[in-house]
Length: 249
Image (cartoon, rainbow, N blue to C red; front, top):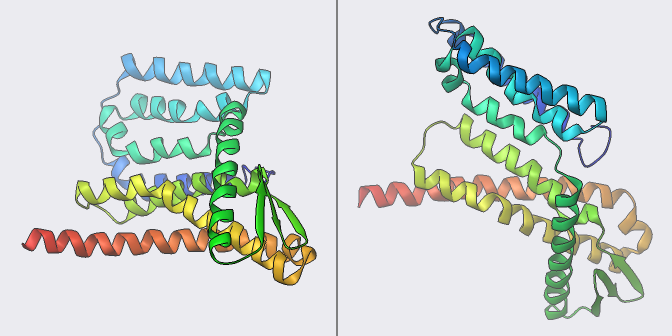
């Protein structure tokens, strides 16, 4: 959580605590029907994963054990009805689990390549003197490398967490509405990241290398999330209007 890549983990934990706190009364009112035959194996397996991850320093096992421990505890205290009630926060634990480095490296490399190509083509069509060598963009007298942080992978992960939470809070909507929004979370984050990289390239071109690597570079990350969230909320409104019109017809 002290690294930029996993900094969202603390926020995910805070959201999980709020979700469980919000449903505490509903959980307390459930009939007490413990499912020991299922609860103990799930709970024990979660503890084994945690201890293994803790002993060998494997964070993916440490964090991956948490939904199993919580699910097992719910089964032992209240039964399967508690598991059905708390399905969303248990699944939401996924966003707190760090991605394996092998997966991160493979996806990051492809994303950087795609972003470099798209940014070069868009700015070239717009009339800017830009060229590309691999993931290095040359514009005017400046060269910029599309680094791992600019791949957008972690912003996609963060937006997916925000998007699924938004859909859960908004309540029941048509399945088609939910499916379209889920499918478009990652494309929206990818498009927003392209806007971010383009903005940094243009800032460097007009204001110099210091401006592109200074405060504006960090601020671009916040702008990226705002742009992505704006598109996501706009998509929700558009789908509401279209599906409502379709239902009336």
